Image (cartoon, rainbow, N blue to C red; front, side, top):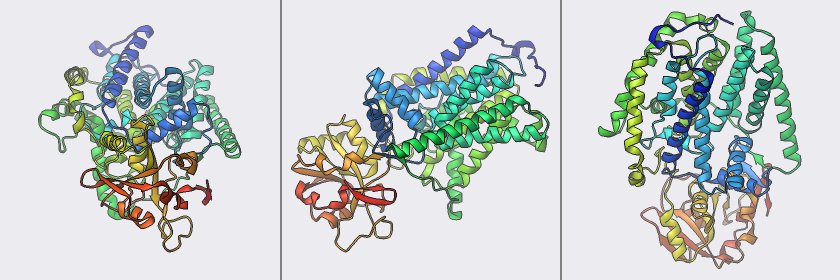
Length: 563
């Protein structure tokens, strides 16, 4: 390990351990409070609603989530388990996802503050200033895509576990609390191996690569080999858990199908990558009003300093970067490179700046790399921190008034207000029905279960998983973060009418239910209740809907079976 380097003069800001802990806790609490307060005024989307319903199911005893189907990142032992704990022991309702996200972000802030000072340098609170400015004070005063950190699950919990793991690796490297650190290492790696492959990409793989780089440079020691062995044992355990889940009838997850982005889409991806990174640092002026851009002006000076110093460092060191950094800093650099490259060239089937979630590790790691390798200028970071604190003080109580102007942070109609839909359904005595993916579970959750809306789609001949004959009903359950029991015919038998929430026009897509496609399968509805220019409630007699047998089938292992 490199000899400890001392800060000198006024930049030496050493705290004893108890003061450090209070310092970390204070700003973590502030960070989590900001995330919770502003997040409560953001509309949830169907992904968040479905995972909340899964957490409810787990809290009621279905720990293995039998009957559920999830995306490739299932979040079972991370966000779902966390929300289920809050629901069961805290008695929380729809606030559970918001509180879960706030807890994760507070944890990310705490770990980032712990990792801001490398072990070979004397601890100083000055190095924590960039973390406070860019992470503890996230830019939530405007409804930007970076507001996704207030949602669960969006990999923020995974990032928290990864940072805990990095801290454990650092302690093992410096021979501090070694036994406890190995336990933390295993407890953070297991949920990631089981629940979120993205965490493997920015946590496990960078540690492996850094190990081999240090090994060939002659800088490795026995502790590193034990770290790799711990990961291997935990990986094997995760495989046993997955095998057990499969044979015991636990939840299923879709396979991950990765491919490169099309060449013609690269210019758009570059634009959204650039905007995403700027949004994280709170310096994106694009499309914002002049008055609301004041925080951007506050942050642009320290942000410019960060960019300039990184540029100089890369220019000077070139190929000698890894030789000059400690193991954790090298892992951060490798993780940033892997995630940034993958997010730029991979097709995630996400629209516009929805891609921002995959740049979160890059943002956090880049801030930590800066604090660990550069001399932080106290004046350039301290003043913006004070100004940002004032911004939050003045916007805190007024934020509720602007709620109606902040509906869809990505501009792709995923976060929607459903109150007017719920009111229309209540007025017409409609309790159960179907909708496209982005409306369905949001209505169910926002109505506290008084209205049950299930996601369906159209099974086209070209894209379907089974043959469709002429004039056959083509409506099928949307098997994506959903539960098999939702679609059983017995759930609908006591209702005289069933509703379909449809779009009158729009692009053909699996997540949007178009009115003409429903009519082509079921015929003209008994009643149409307009909801503005492009949304309607189509009402059908229950017997007519029951004639569509495909609505009561479920996809298992590539085949459809009757429910």
